[in-house]
Image (cartoon, rainbow, N blue to C red):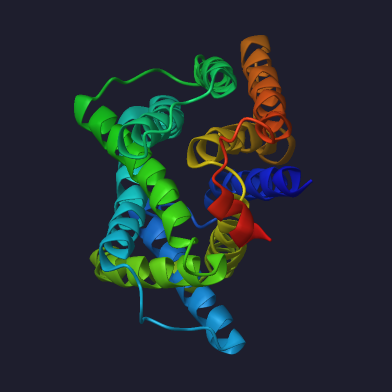
Length: 302
C-alpha cells in the first residue's frame, strides 16, 4: 500500500506539471518562455521556503554539500534548457526528447552510479511510454530538427533525471519537504537574474499574475513536494518513467480546455502512456520479495 500511495503522489505531481502549458497559454501574449520559467521557479522557491519556515524546519546546516550542489545545478539547468529546446525545435521534438529521454538517462545513471540494474518491467513500461509520446506528438506540428535545440532538450532531460536521483539520496538524511524547499530556494536564487533580462510588465496583468501564482504555488511547490514524498518508496528510474504522464495530461487539457484536437494516432499515444503507467504501477507489488527497494528507503518512508 505504501508503494501504491507513493506512485499516486508521483502521478499527481506529473499531472500538475502537465498543466503548465495550459497556464502559459492563458498568460498574456508575448511572454518569453524563459521569463515564465524563471518566474515559476522564483515563486515556487519562495513558497516552499515560507512553508518550511512556518513549520520551523528551515536549516542550511548538515547538508551533504556535493549532493545539494548537484541537485541545485540540475534544477537550475532544467528550466531554461527545456524552454529553450521547445522554442527552437517546437513542442513535439522538445517534449519527446526532453521528457522522453529522462527515464532512459535515469535508468542508465542508476545502473552506472548505483550499480542497480533496471528491471524488465521498467524497460517495457518506459519503451511503451516513449512510443506513446512519439505517437502523441508525431503529427502535432512540423518537425524542426534544430541540432542546438535537440542538445538543449537532452541537457534538460538529463538534468531532470539527475535531480530525481540526487534528491532520492538527500531524502535519506533530510525530510522531503526540507529537500525540495532548500533546493528550489537556491535554484530560484540562481535564476533570479534572468528575470531582469526580459520584459516583466506581463506579470502586472491579472491573467499574468494569476497564471504565475498557479504555476509557482500549485504546479511547482505543491507538485514537487508530492514528487519528493513519492521518491521515498519509488526508485528514481520508476519515478521518472511515471512523469511521462505529464505530456499526456498536457495533451488532454489542450483538447478539453483550449479546444485543440487530437488525431487517432495521437489518441493511441495517450493510450500507450496510460498502459505504461499501469505496467509500472504494478512494480511495487512484485518488489516485496525481490529486494530491489533498499531497506533504508523503506524505513525513511515509515
